Length: 286
Image 1 (cartoon, helix red, strand yellow):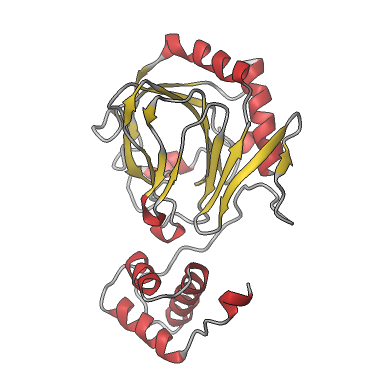
Image 2 (image 1 turned 90 degrees about the horizontal axis):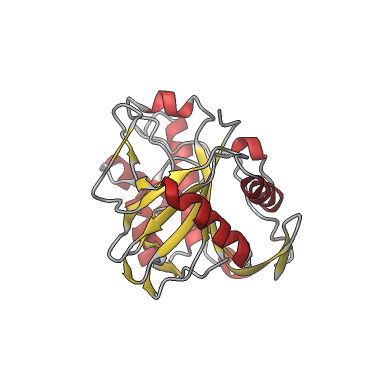
């Protein structure tokens, strides 16, 4: 924190931010420009957000950043190397603040991974994406995996994993969607995307009515591909290797690119990839 405090947000910087906003620049582009100029990520983000909020109050900014909301997350006080997840210890392999990303080791046992794959395999179909205009779903070229959804608590295994997630991330089980299992064959991928729903789109009212906005994602790796298949965060040049039993958690406190949660599944280059995904909502998912 001492290093961050050495960077002072000056009136000149605030005026520059306002000028960019008036010129129609997107907040994420302004943030990228500040980082490229040497501003530390957290300092730049806070300066951008506060400046835009202050200017909005004066009636001069046309587009405001959404208000941040509480999000799930592990307790990383005192930088622990192992977290207790209710029924097993989970290693903390890597953390990042913006975006909030935590890579977890040993979240699932080998047996749990294999049981999930076996239960999901007979129910797989081509994965779909949400249609913004209607709130429905459709097959899309950006997502070439096959997948299926379990109902929340559908099996004893699902219920045990969901309780583990709730304990580790301090988020109620009822505020989570059912587990989704995905299978990627060689060449399959999921191009970079956001997990939150765009509230400005006409079809999102019905989606958001089922539990509010998505605020966190946990991707659990059920096998280790021979090559490829990493989870990538292109805005911050982060690549998480898909290792059997490990998981990557990330949260996004507002439905806006400034949360830096853009991510994707890189193409599988050899072998296959199995993952289980858990999405967490603001409220109870029904």
